[in-house]
Length: 407
Image (cartoon, rainbow, N blue to C red; front, side, top):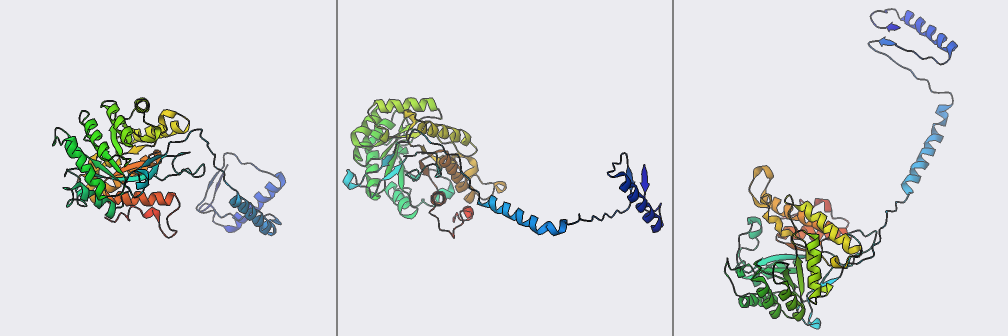
């Protein structure tokens, strides 16, 4: 059946008559189903008459809906709560005068009972800590980093003071790269003198790192441990490829902490941690460094590995119940952090953002201590930590962190 409306039917009276006939026909039949119907029209107008009494019921229906909405708004959400049998060991970095050192205060990391910032499950006792890198000689750094320290890079003690006094470093990470035989081959004795000068220049805890030379580092760290005896510094690092026993003995003798470094391998991490414990170190003297890759250069591996280590420790694995160190200044090894490219945006912002995103990722995955290079990254991460701990003022907008870099 086809009904043609518009040009084919010109008289309105005929349309009205047709509608009346259809209405009577439908009234006789009751419900009517049309099959294979085609309606062609330039314009159709439908007038729907409300059911008798329906309009009068609208206020009551509205009230019922509002009550339902109010009930939904008042409903409480209870997140699923996980409880863990294990606890991450708390490690104290630095020693005050009363503890045999000369630091103004100690920094505590670890002690977690749940994953980072899961405050609805448990309150972890210590915030993530921030260290800033310095070196024992001028080195090539990205311009956006170098511009903050160029005038003090020749003097590690002054460089350390700049990090603490101007940029708020809680810990200074001194890297003795000049000891590398392929660079300057500085002697362990000379390196120890540099450590002594930095300890006198600042009163914050110290991380003492070698050059990465597996033959030289144990000798350098041993000499540094002796000159910093009692200060509870972090010796960075012991690994399976160097003389970890020598480093462990020096740490035990002079009351220091050892970084257990492995290249992204949880089984080797467990093995190294056990070896250091067998050498007489306590869990309170070991920090794990499972290797930190930069954003876009393997960060996903870092994320998954740190989470696995942290969860394993919380679930009771005694070989992985140590805090995690993340050297997120490795971000500057990514070309996107420093290379000039109009397409990528200004590198003055891009570099700090690259380091910041890498740090945030590692922090959410379970990192406890972070080594950073750029002052802007330090400001952003500190503010983020404060906001996650509920310490940011109500009028501050954490979502403005990118525009607040303040280069």
